[in-house]
Image 1 (cartoon, rainbow, N blue to C red):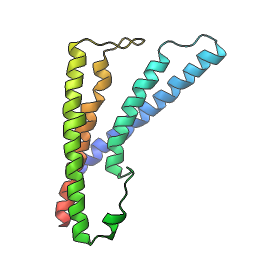
Image 2 (spheres, one colour; image 1 turned 180 degrees about the vertical axis):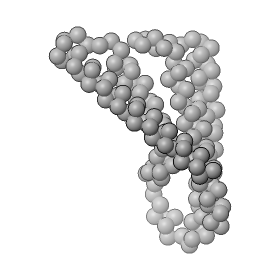
Image 3 (cartoon, rainbow, N blue to C red; image 1 turned 45 degrees about the vertical axis):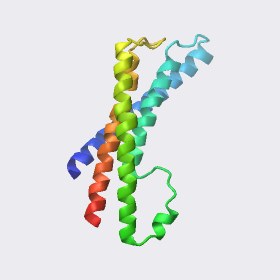
Image 4 (tube, rainbow, N blue to C red; image 1 turned 90 degrees about the vertical axis):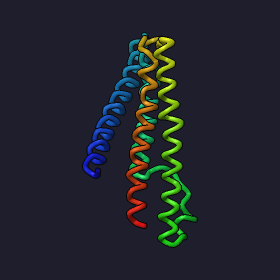
Length: 157
C-alpha cells in the first residue's frame, strides 16, 4: 500500500508541476499579447481560470497527504497519545465522508450533467465536463489518503 501511495503522490506532484508551468506560460502570454502586441489573446484568461481550478483542487489533495492544510491542533496536541489517535480517526473519517459526498459523488453528478447538457466553454470551446472532471478525481484521492491515514491511526492504537 505504501508503494502505491508513493506512486500516486509522485504522479500528482508531476501533474501539479506541469499545471503550474502551464499557467505561468499562459499568463505570461496573456501579458505579452495585451501590453506588447496590443492584441490580447482570446483564450488565455479562460484557460488560466480552468488551470487554477485544477491546481487548487488537486493541490488540496496533495496538501491533505502532506498534512499542509491549516489546522488548529492546540487541543489535540495537549491530549494524551491514545486520545490523539482517536481524534485522528474521527478527523480522517469526517474528511473521508466529506470527500465521498461533496467532491466525489457531487462531482460525478456535475460532470454527468454538463456532458448531458453539452455545456461548452466560451473561448476554448471544450466541454465543461472536462473542466469539472477534477472534482471526482480530487474526491477519490482525498478518500484514498484518508484511508491511508485511518489505517495508520488504527495501527497506532
